[in-house]
Amino acid sequence: MSFNLVHPYISYLIYFVIVSSLSAWIGDFFKKKNNTINVILLATYVLSIIALSIINSIFLIFIYSAGFFLDIDFAINIFWIGVYIYCANEFLKIFNPVFENFKFYRVIPKLVMIGPFIVSFIIFYLLFYGDKIYNLSPNCENTNYPKIKVCKYSNGTYTGEMKAFKRHGLGEYVWNTGKTWDGQWENGKRVNKNN
Image (cartoon, rainbow, N blue to C red; front, side, top):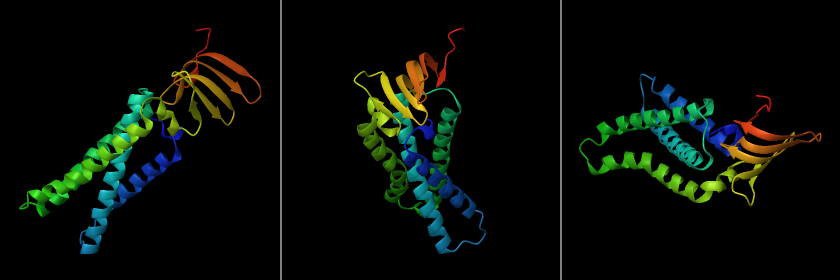
């Protein structure tokens, strides 16, 4: 999922995850931690895990609905899944000694990790599954034909097939200057007819 092609709120969520995860990671280097620092670290871990859960649920809905390319954007999304798994593991390590004797309370940290993912997945599934995924784009709209999208950019308008929010398949681009290109697109780029 190319985050620069979807709604800016998703980018803001990623920035939040980066800042909260880094601050929690840096906080772990403090040798002497008091209760205030521990509570702040716990809160940043919880918030970053919840935000990572939301990002990963959006990513899964995006892949099922819009498709993907094996490119740097896909690699970054796989990286976020790895970060989520790492943070969840660290979160569980924090609570294992605390709830060692209380088997019932050991479920709480797992619910904090899995609960937001399940809830956000259901919400995003209902709101954005299938062709509704293009509601995430500030540029693109659905048409009466399932494969055809209309995307308005600062320098022109594209009408045609898309994959992963990029021009892919048959389509026409009309620049604001009046210049037109109609033909095959791959991964957002025109395919030269001479090849």
